[in-house]
Image 1 (cartoon, one colour):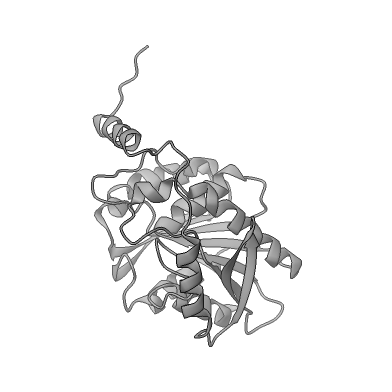
Image 2 (cartoon, helix red, strand yellow):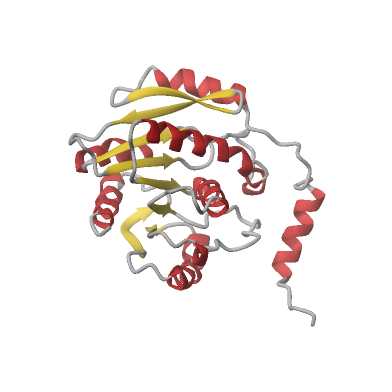
Length: 263
């Protein structure tokens, strides 16, 4: 039987082929990461700067304990493409706000490429994010954490989901994807998130004014979430918010904490 293959998918595969997608030529820009770390670390006022190790490289993370102990759990925060663990627009309100609601946070630096790099370029380095997430989980478990949740934004969702899907026995309690399905124009996702395979609670949350790709695939994501069969999984939309939740960090924090309280 010959299956129908979407024309856009074929075009995307061809583009990846001619741009060298299948060659192991891409790696995180460690020098750029170090520059970002030097610029960010000195200005962390809330939380503790922690250098974690992935493979042979150290990477920046920021740990902040809950105002209440014992905490309800710990949340690993994964930023979007090209940003850092103290990004003021979305990461900072979450990493500093969640501790006020009883959650420890660990915001971690993910692999970065040059400013001109595209979504497909970042797909090439998805595996390089895995050791960092594993290092973050290990750090939290060494602190006695048992209830560990991953919260990722934008391109960070692709990194986090790729790891989570390949590590179903990781012990992660829940997954929060903010702005899921974000891509570049002309670079569609090669395959949808296999949310039907994720049995833990999932929150798929986006802004009312999010990117078209995030909205366009929302129904498909919801159907797959329902297939997974976890009654605590939800989709939510934050009013008056763009993809980066510009000036709407508090609104995002409220929706996230409201959902966490249902677990």
